[in-house]
Length: 238
Image (cartoon, rainbow, N blue to C red; front, side, top):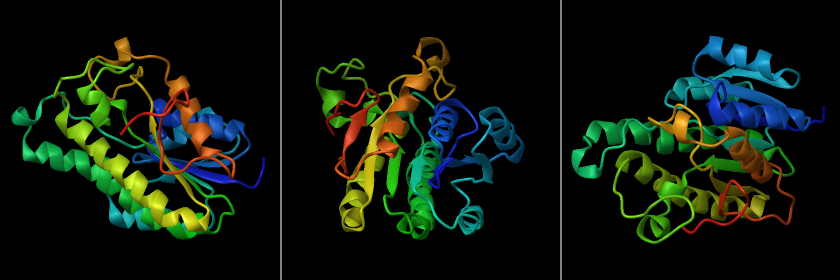
């Protein structure tokens, strides 16, 4: 074990759990953020040495404050928790779905990041990784790209929320650059998780995406900030 600490939100399953496991394997103490205490504890037991449970619902301000009070210093924050409620285009998506999606994917990231900023500022090398989506790239959505067929307006709430997250990534990176922060967004690719219908059957290995997140979480001092990167390290256009 080393003295570095990390928090991964939504870490009781899927990509988040693999990120937590890989960070623990690097010797970090990893807080496994989970809304459900039981699922979080089971994930900690499966990850093993270095993992610590942390009850954290990114849509609950009081719960976020309680979780932040438990962490004195934080070196890495991975904002992984996210939801995708449907694959509907904007004309078929109700405002309530947009609200619920943004509550987790955008407002939750702001709430968690701001709450843990004091702990991150105590680190000599603070790193923030926001798990986004290649489908949030406006360039890829309107032009040929290596990950999906452009020109489809589906999953409007999810994709627009991740585009907003990308904008926040840039703004946080600019705001915190003088304090040594590296803040970047990750496009994990379609993975075999339960995020969207069909992903479990059609998606690739979530461990590959987790490795991309860990790469950004452990960036050296000369690493990039304010960037958007695919799981394999290649830049993704905004």
